[in-house]
Image 1: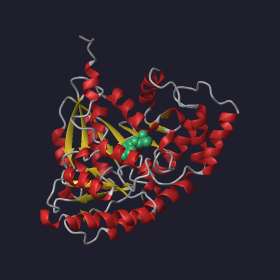
Image 2: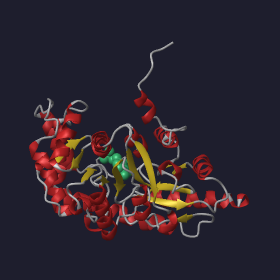
Image 3: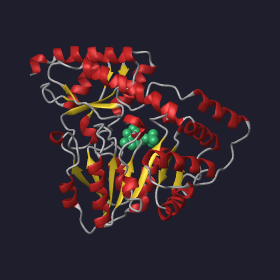
Length: 393
Ligand SMILES: Cc1ncc(COP(=O)(O)O)c(C=O)c1O
């Protein structure tokens, strides 16, 4: 006999197999010196900008190793507000911002603050792999609304409105989306904001990739419905800072107060030296975002071109971000068999699209934010693998 765990652990457990298992196997193989190319995670092959590292080191050396304000340092909150306002046109100030440990932490805090047991949260499918557990953590039920491949992975807003019930509290969206790279256009953003206002719902807008869209911006839900939208983002992708865990939420002050109460009993402040690094990153944001954006733009084209004419598969052009979905329904094997077979035969790791929901069944996802030579090599290996599958078709 052993004491029981809380119902919570069941809500955050993944159903069946660990979606990241192949990715971690590939990472381990790479660390052991095996000839593998890891395209299974959204972590740009770029170093954090030097001035950012310097700011962190200087801050550490100056003894910045004590507790910090749980909502984040006022100067950083103000800098995030200014950046958000410039990017979206939404008028916000430091009081509209809480600093958290990455977008993921922000999504989790938002989930806990906005819904609970007996309530429902809608998420547009495909969705980032952590969303189901993040949403269910609150006790709310996840309701999926499809963005079908046949509609170019765009939202079916009529289906979304039809899925709203008296129990619905919030809608989770990501723009640009992971895995599809689709950006919600201005009309979709207007319509979604109108739905939120009509049904008095929250929207959690995950904009972690927004800085990678053309011009560094996407049509903003927050600007359209400031009282209904919380925007979550971080420095992870746009500044090549995934390991720093520097993220935030921008939202109405009433929301920020609740989020701060959660942060106070969960995180109690991001390390001061990470916050000083984040402040520097925001100071040089135009330049560093442009670097990552250009890096991704060039590789999107390179990878897309290199996969043309590969038998049995079809790459899907993303609006922005660092991911490409590849339709493998013509390969003759399941996406799960495809990713495992590809890794075994050629040492290239991709993710099965099913990790991201029902609408991406039949697809696999590749991250193309890698150096050009390995990316070309990966495409050549995918081609060779697909040619070897010819008898399966
Ligand atoms: C859509 C989306 N949201 C959130 C995250 C998590 O980002 P962060 O490193 O800021 O926690 C990711 C990471 O891949 C993502 O793709």
